[in-house]
Structure formats: C-alpha cells, structure tokens
Length: 239
Image (cartoon, rainbow, N blue to C red; front, side, top):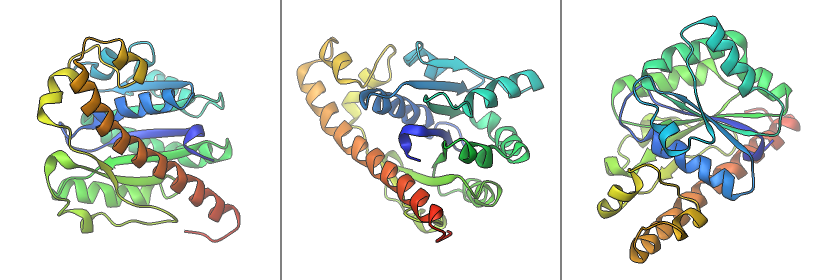
C-alpha cells in the first residue's frame, strides 16, 4: 500500500491550526501525481475546502446514521480513488469514535487501502492527549504528527511519540506573509497549470513554487514511510 491507495484524515481537536490548508495541498499534490482524488469536508460552519476545490469535494456530515454510512462507504470503497478528509474540530470526537467502532482502519487494510491520519500538532494538553488516545484507538492507521511552522519552533515535538516503522514528524513550511492574500482567497489552486494561468504576479508564483517544493518533498517522504510500514508489516516485523 502507498499514498496512491490511501485515505488521509487531516485532523486536530483544535480549530484554526491549518487543517484545511493541509487538505488543499494534499488534493493538489495527488492530482499533480496523476491520481484521481476525492475530498470530504466535515467542517460544520463554512465548507471552506469545497470553496477551493468544488469539483473534488463533497460536503459530509456524521450527525445521523445515513450520513455516517454514506461517508464511510465512500472512504473504504476499493475504487482506485485517493481520498482526503478535512475533519472539522466539531466532528473530531464523533468521527474517530465511529471509526473505532466499525473497524475502519482494519477494513481499509483488508481492501489494500492505506489509512493515514495527519494530526496537526499543537503544544496544548488537549491535543497531546487526543493524539495519544488516537494511537490507542486506531493502531493500524499510519499516524503522522504535522508541525505547522506558523506556530514557531517545534517545542512540542517530544510530546508526540512516534510509533511504528518509518514514522516521523511532517513539516508544513511557513508561508511568507505576503502570499496569504493569494492563497487564502478562493478560487485558488496550488496546481502548476492553475498558477501559470492565474493573475498571480510572476514573483509571487516563483515564491509559491519554492514553498511548494518543500511541501511536496514532505508528502513524498510520507509516501515512502507508508510503503515501508506496509512492507515491514507484511514480512512480520510488527510495529
């Protein structure tokens, strides 16, 4: 299993930590790698991800059984589509409780789909405890803490224990302040062709491409770690 055949949940029990930005980057990364991508927006207040990638994003909810079935059936469908979930903090507890109850990670593995959680790490006790609980609840999922450099030096790194083969901290590089007005105004895509055809000034495009190269490197390394974990598991080395 690789990132190509994966369901990646972008998560944090905290709001405004960069989850939607990370989900947008994942969508464009996979699209540029030639993969078909489907995204699911579980933010209750705005549908922000859908505003940036409407053609690939489904607004989802898990407040009732019908919504739960519709979402998880799509996530574990063996259809060759790479899936991204932008999990709003309001849905965090309910989503992972349900995922544990239905054996989401185990079922994904049975269908040769790599389940991954990119957990945006922050130093507060609530997030640290939520991460530890997630490790216990979904032991078969690839759990990768993400350091969003907008929060400064990763002083909380030691609070997020890495477990399993090949796991490591993922870095979301700091975006230059002058670029935010372009990146955070929909519609905007990080795809090369979209940038080239946009009205974004050339010097801004150059700076964005420099930043994106760092982001794509982090994602490709995560892809290798997922593959490594699967290979070691398949030959019985355990975690």
